[in-house]
Image (cartoon, rainbow, N blue to C red; front, top):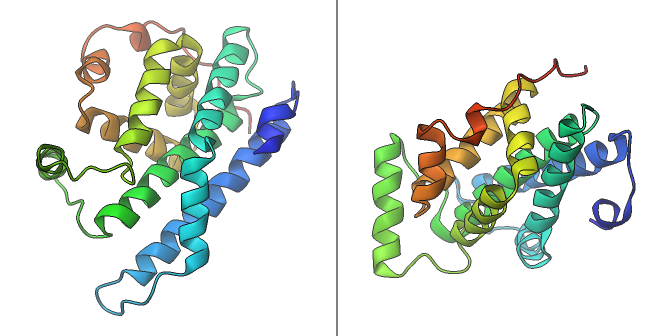
Length: 208
């Protein structure tokens, strides 16, 4: 996290490697949480996993990942693609963080598909007041606020969707769907209308 805050990185390599480490760590936390909560063989959740997620929630990690997306979008607008890989890893880390928090606070099996079921579950919990601070809704609201306020961040997410590898595209779509499942009608309408996401220039091919 200190690297994300303090490093000047024109090549994008340090940002990509730092965010990739965060994404990998959070994906392994999710695997550990799911294994602990398995209905076939439930086990006590490892204290280290809980500490990692709690620290990630309270240390403004999400805000730093959003800043990484903003930096990537600004770099892309200036004509460079150096920061696109870092943006892809940041999107993965954002989704893994939100997903891990949901698993901890709601349970590994409570979010079912199709999306209509998930929407009803989330809004039912909102009405009952059970969407507490421990849930990912607050994290998603922070992401939505930053996204709507920052064109560079929108550019970064757009390029992740068009230039990213499968795992980054999957993470972007999951974050977008999660945002649409919350109360943010403004965010949802952005993807239905001919908004700013539709008017970006066509992205250049991703550097391998």
